[in-house]
Amino acid sequence: MMTAPESMTALRAPLAAVSSGLDLQSSFITTLEGYGLTPATAHLLWLPLPMLLVLVAAVVGVLVNVWLERKISAAVQQRIGPEYAGALGVLQPLADGLKLLFKEDIIPARADGLLFTLGPVLVLIPVILSWLVVPFGQHLLISDVGIGVFLWIALSSIQPIGLLMSGYASNNKYSLLGGLRAAAQSISYEIPLALAVLAVVMMSNSLSTIDIVNQQNGAGILSWNIWRQPVGFLIFWICALAECERLPFDLPEAEEELVAGYQTEYAGMKFALFYLGSYINLVLSALLVAVLYLGGWGFPIPVEWLAGAIGQSVDAPLVQVITGSLGIVMTVLKAYLLVFIAILLRWTLPRVRIDQLLDLGWKFLLPIALVNLLVTAGLKLAFPAFFGG
Amino acid sequence: MTIASFTQWICFLALSAAVVVGSLGVVLLPNIVYSAFLLGGVFLSVAGLYLMLNASFVAAAQVLVYVGAVNVLILFAIMLVNKKETLAEIPGLPLRRLLSGGVCAGLFLLLLRVDVTTPWAVPGPSPAGDDATIKIGMHLFSDYLLPFELASVLLLMAMIGAIVLARRDVYTVDVITGENADQALIEKIRTPLLVETAPDRNPALESTR
Image (cartoon, rainbow over all chains, first blue to last red):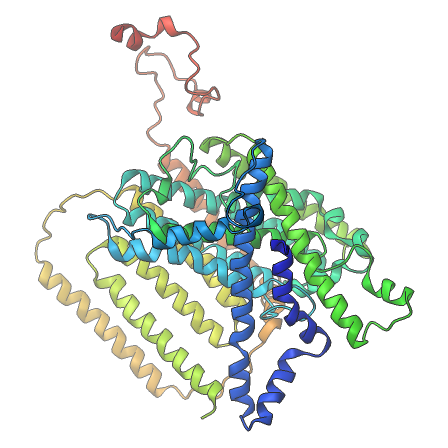
């Protein structure tokens, strides 16, 4: 049987196989030009392909994530978890999704229909757009925009507007308060998050995710940013959990003790959009932690050394195909390791109160992140060889 | 016309239309919440225009600062004080509207004239692209250092002002006992609300028993 992470890898492998070794984009365009199309038309036909692939990868990532959440939660609580929908319950997330798809789409009578519909969309779109900058290999991303991680930070700041919008449009005081709380949480953890990213950017001298990974892959696992930025790593991970509204920071939803916050009035596919958004965001955050601190697509031992040890050139087509696939496996593996930790954290930590949450963000993480930035700047000047002069 | 320039033309038209229609909506809509959300849309469209000028850093900064911070704060302010109350009738409202409309129309005509009479250099200077981030950083820490620092002082003043305004209704004298209030108590108590320290001394609880 093919487990879910393997099927994901299989999905992405074709892209890796060709575009790292043979450059899929140019070969695709040359082929189409052979059929008498202009280069511009061929390029236009190429453009949607990587986007569709990443969209499918994101959705499959969510399905895997939901299945893992159910199974790991069950294991933590010494239950079996889903087991009848497919082998080991792998079809359970699909069943969940279909259930939500066929549920009645309710818009409350006194709610503001337009904003009520627009809210979940505004929550989901920035998260999906952020996949633009997630690299799975040297050339394996949709677009190597120069502003890289900054684009992600900017996009994730749109999300609170969607939360406020859905909270307001529900015309329900619990929804409004929940929306305000969710937005307050989201904007207060964005600042330490951005400062932690800034320290990494300072060491890499670039905002591009490709450059950030390349700067970490000189000596395999030893050169990963987590050793140089342990504090930044922790700050980033805590803030990422808070941004995703994961336990211990899931106050906006707090399923056992509150009305479901800004999601209270939502049902059917609109609720599913929130659900999808939060899980895509979790996978995205895990991928970005892997990119920023765990060497991205890098293997713990540099592939150049391995290729040299067996007497192969790194530029040989077959070696490039293998290293490309290895890069994708490594990225996904690191990301899902972090997702596993996030799920374990969910069942081991108690939820914080709202005042503790804001105190932690503003009075602890923010000063620590500033000190981390200052220390990084000092170390960069003192030891330029180790901290990216 | 190539496909690329055609796409660019369509994007430009769509974004400009979004900016114009959106800003008209911000000014004219009676519901202030709609105005605030539309303002976010206008900011996003302006960011799109920056993106079309190859200024991706400025576009992302526009989204982060104006949509992510300014617009969210505006929405917060509206939603925290969104009372349904009928405002007092302002005398001479039609005349006021006419006057402000006239001023805006005059300003618009002036800008149109500037647009038509200025000899624009077409095509403009070549875009800096991804180097723009470095260039902006250089300028901020060399020739624009003073305005940059002044802006931060301004923000600090605004923040202190906000804190003073938000905490102005702090009592200096304890209402019940008449003694001077301990200012340290204005901070929230650290103990959870449900833990009662001395239940039998609470008169409110006594009366309910």
